[in-house]
Length: 51
Image (cartoon, rainbow, N blue to C red):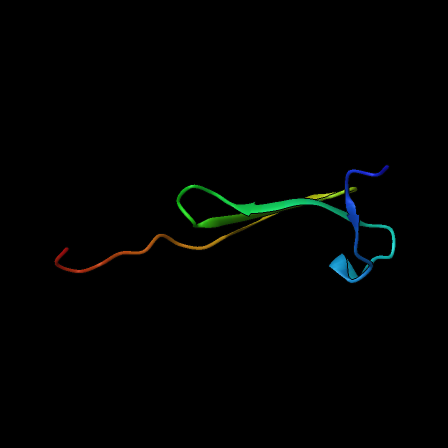
């Protein structure tokens, strides 16, 4: 049995299988692992004035 979920919509490829996805502890990075790639999305840190 395959450990990755088949999802042909992911990255517009019928050959990618979603293996894992999750956020970093800070919540500023999202990681998505497929059977053929690892993609990281990041956003700038949150800054609050006067805090």
